Image (tube, rainbow, N blue to C red; front, side, top):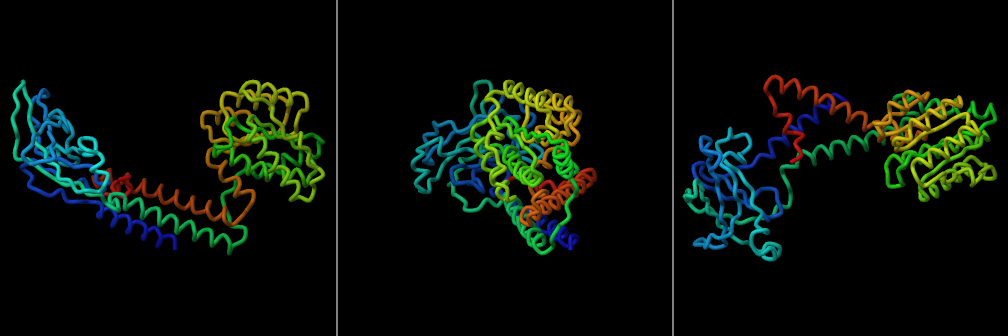
Length: 399
């Protein structure tokens, strides 16, 4: 099934690659103007033969007008003779795009009227000007669909179908297998140790507000941890640096206690605002860890320079420490000082891993398959590029 799917993907992508090509039109020996393909109808593309042997002091100037007989007084473009070559033409032609709405009446181009623009090419060298070729003209037209991005659209459709299929499969197969994440498996052990020792667990939010993806992922993990501590009857302290994150954390912890059937065990003061600045926040948490000595510390979210101070303080108190962050600059510090560290996207996968909900598990499985396909395409493309075949690079061109 997977082999058939991969074969289908490659077939569609190769077909989409060939559909993005477009004809330039006109003779190759003269100055040309034509509507820019795949745009909103507000630009004209110009093309003319280049002269690679000319001096760098030679310039090409393009003048524009809305009438064939001029006057050509509006300068639309000025380039050097060794600049703006057409891609893949071995530097034998210049290619430039002129935005017409910036040259003339913008309102006329906005109201959908078809205006024919005329362009005159002039070569300037040592204060001498020489007209080249004939006057070229074109009328810009808007396109409903950008065919150069058809490959992206097809890739999106394929990956969306794959995601829906994985979600459907996850609903039919309970306990869908995904890769083990030791840091998440250790949460129960850390909370069990805190329960045995009669000490609290400390959950530390990162320094980003609620608009950060890492903070949203941290809230999801907090909900699962709060559900466990409610079942174990273990105190949970949650520190925050932003009022909005504080309010959300309070609601999430309260809902978890309610889900566990222990709403009376919820203590609102245990979810608190430690400080509103970075290093006062660190000092406040370091004091809590030193005085109360929590048995388990969870550092979840996006952290900055305070990461090493917090994790070192927690390690000195002998607590089990689990960190999860997508801040790659802070990963070395957490790996060194914490017992378990969730790196990068493992932070985002945690909610699916802990909740085991089919919708989340199916999406996670689809992402893993897509990553495998992309890795295979990269390796296959690198081999082809080494052999001089580079067609696969056009498949994933952004357009």
